[in-house]
Image 1 (cartoon, helix red, strand yellow):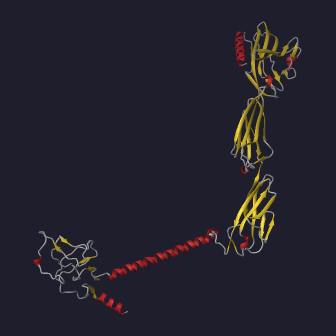
Image 2: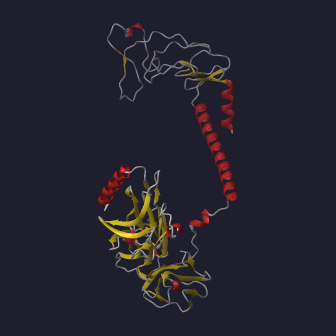
Length: 505
C-alpha cells in the first residue's frame, strides 16, 4: 500500500505543477481511534480568472484500487455511496445548496472503523483546466482492552513446590500492540505471547509464574500496560492457602520446682485458619493437673518433676496438618538467665562503671606501692657503703669516702677456670705483658683475696663478674662515722645503730 500511495502522491504533485495556479489543499495525514470522529480537509484554490468547477469526487485508495466515497455536483447535488453513507458527510452545508459552493469540500468521518484506514483522494474536475487532486493518509488506532485476572480463585501451596501461573495480564485488540511489564516483590518469572488478529489488531498476553508458598500469601502483583504514551495499571493480591506453620511458646528454659502459673501455647500461621488443635505428651500422657483451653495448656499448681517431657501440638486446617514440638525440663532452683544481667538500667550501669574504675585505680596504686617497698627493702639489704657519699663498697670495703684508692697495674691477660667451685684466682699467662710471681710475695690464703673497689652510682660502668684486681695494702684510717664489719665491709654509724635497734626488737 505504501508503494501505491507514494506513486500516487508523485503523480499528484506533477499534476499540480502542470496546472496554471489551481491547487487542492489537504493535510498530509490524519489519525483517529476506532469509534471516534475525524475530518479530512479539502480546499480548492482557484486561479485568476477562475475556472469552473464541474464536480468534486472523494475516493478511497487501498492496495491500488479506487473506491468512490462521496460526490458533489452543482447540477445533481450531493451523493454519499455505501458503505460510507451512514458515516460520511460534507462538513459545510453550502455544498448541499441548490447553487452550491464547492471551494471547500471537507468531509467528516463518524464512528471510525479499522477498515477506514486508507489513502483518500479529493479530485476537482474543472473547465477548461481539467482535473486537479490531492491525497491524505488516514490511520486508525484501536485502544486495547486491558484486564488482569487470577488464574484460579484459590492458590494452594503444595509440598512439591511446583511452579504455577498465578495471574494473567491481557491487552487485547490493540493497534499498535501494547507492552506489558510486571511490578512485584515476588520472586517469579513472566511469559509473553502476541496474537495478530484478522482486523489488524494485536492481543498481548503475559502470565506470571511463581512457586506458591506461605511467603507469597498477601503479596501484591501489578500489571503495567503501556499503549503509545499511555500507561494502564491493574493489581491483584494473591490469596495463597497453605498448611499450618506451628510453634509452641511458653517454655523459657527456667521451669523450676514450685514455680507457679506456667503454660504452653500452640501458635499456628495458617490459611485458612486452624480449626483443630491436639496436644499430647511424647511417650506418655499429659499430667493430671493440665487444663486445655483452645490452643493453650494451663498447668495448675506448682511445678513438679512430673511436668518434664516432650510436648507435641498438632494443628489442622483445610489444607493439612503440621506439628510443633518442645522439650520441657525441670530444674530444682531458678536458672539465672543471660537477660537478668544484660537488662540493667542505664543509671545503674554508669554507676557500676564508675565504682569499678575507682576500685581498679586503688588496686593499681596499692600494687605499685607494694612493689616499690619490696624493691627498696631488697636494695637496703644489699647496700654496702657510705650513705652520705652514695658509694657502694665491693670486696673488703677499705676505702676512703671521697674517691677510689690507687690500684696497682692490672694484668690484661688472666685465665680463670670456668667450672671451679673455689675462689676465682688469677693464673699467670706467660706473656711479656704480665709480671712474675716473685715481684711480690702473696699469702695464698690470706693475702690473695677477691679484690674490692668502690663505684659511684652516677657512673655508668659495666663490670663483668670476672673483672679482678690484685689486692692492695689497706689503708689504716677509717672515716670517723664508719664502722668496720666482719664481712669486710664498712657501714655508717647511723646504719649500724638502726640495725641494732631492729635486732633487739
